[in-house]
Amino acid sequence: MAEIVPFRRTRQWRRADYYGGRGGGNGGGGWLTAARESGPILWAAPLALGVAVFLATSPQMRGGVAMVVPQAGTGDRESASFGQCGAFSSRQACVIDGDTFWYRGQKIRVADINTPETSKPQCAAEAELGAKATRRFAELLNAGAFSLEPADRSHDQYGRALFVVTRGGASVGGVLVREGLAEEWQGFRRGWC
Image (cartoon, rainbow, N blue to C red; front, side):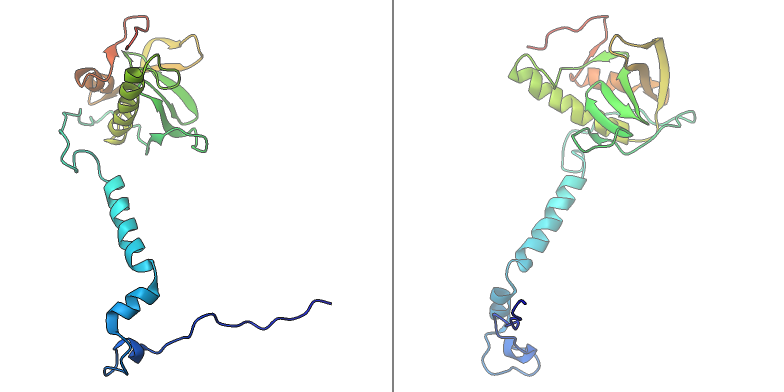
């Protein structure tokens, strides 16, 4: 049978008056002693809150350049919270790259634009521009309701559904083109290096 080992505390518990509370106490050291004994909680919690606020705000909120984004029209009915696709992301709403995304279980290729590749870029410049296009495309999709307008054909050679993403009748892909993160689709992919 196993031996029962009694639990022993590793540090001495102190009353509040040791830290200078409730009438001054007997020289415990006040708030500085409390800070030392409280450990990393005093700096980790505010740091985590600051990081969360920074990551939750958009580039426009952090002083970035505000770009004109088409406003949602009365016919725009699609919306979701899009993040970047990853190994554990759901295929309900995530962005693969600047011109491809998953929405409601369907892989959609934006039919009117072409963006730099992120999966197999030809050079570092293409990889960097592709990452920027991916982040910006997610921001644009998250900016409000949008519509999926049918393209000239229903699917591309890879089986992806083809749609033009619009908001208020204007192409969301057009914003990426104006910002230099995409080009208008011309029937073939060009090099970005």
